[in-house]
Length: 475
RNA sequence: GGCCCCGUCGUCCAGUGGUCUAGGACGCCGGCCUUUCAAGCCGGAAACGCCAGUUCGAACCUGGUCGGGGCUGCCA
Image (cartoon, rainbow, N blue to C red; front, side, top):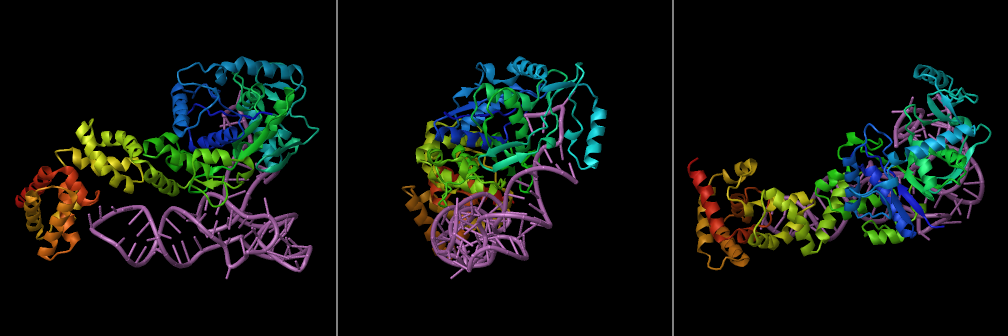
């Protein structure tokens, strides 16, 4: 049997890292087993659905490197992969259930229902014990699925093992709302049956709903899929990851300077491991090693510290040319304009030094901006701490003279000149170099000094030091 | 309350009855390197929730207990 898996994110918001992790595991499973990966859109929440979110989902998945064999396309014909296009189908299924006596109309109002729920809870019973009616009047209202009371629902979950739910713990759930829109349970299960989904791989929050889905599939005369419930992703507070934990949308990480490979790798080790203490690996390696059986049962905390570290690892591992390509948009944004060919050349010289120390692509721009701007902004704290000190003017004045007199302005000469200065003045290297750093880069944190000076060029370096001297002189 | 899931360092994983005085990674602490910041290198603190049972032997098996989480909607 060929594996067919799917994800069905809803387009009510930006795609969440939890959903992305589900998508990733489905993709890994499909690719490992030579199966089919499908992307459906669950847009049954007509009020909150938005095409813009669909675009966000598709771009996000592509960015991560996930591809799918069937499903929605950006701006393309989503066809039958959007659930809103299949409302008729769901209604037909719901009606046929009613005709067969498997479901019924329920026109009781909410107050009545709530009252029943409260009563059930007080007695320690499941609401389903009360919200159930087998000989209903055929008026309007919602359609509920009549849960058969004669047998327990059992299934074997690939990650959790044997599961058993007593039928009285499942209430007669709504499958069609009074406005004619199907609920998640109905739409999702009908799709899974219609598209021949063999494995449903999703978050553990849906574990309790699985009996409903199995019942629905059987009612359609189909064999239920095999289920695999993934451990949930938690926030630092140990609660299900949600908006209030900060950046939970995939887009936030893309825009925050993370590499897709790093995010992919990091998400992969949340609830899964290939064993042997290996945690840095490529997508190909993950595909080759993946198995649902090795998925962990424990919830995982989304640890952004480790993601950040991993991103740094990936940045440093980039081929120089690749790094240049990826850095481009970030440099452009930080400088605020397109760079000239010559400037890109300058950047490519200093780039390896920046690559070594960046953990996020967003750090690149600020580190090299000093090379491409004429009105440098001086970081106030750095200025106060390093420049506005006794005797610094004298040092800088000397620095300017020495830099100016260098014949061949390369790293070796610059280093020799500045080291000689420190030695002759009898001061430490740090004391001599820090003022220069701040003078030419505007900050006490920068790429290595000599390389920075050479990249900036002799004339501009000297000019910057003199400029600082002027400012110092005028108080 | 009810149903269900989970329980190894702060965090993510390894571990499937003896090779575990429990291994790796992030983070943290200390040191080295050093012109800043990183990176790198060296070292350190840090966990099998608890109680029974099974067994010659339990992190691994069983029961209970405690703790955490999910679900309990005309959200998904």
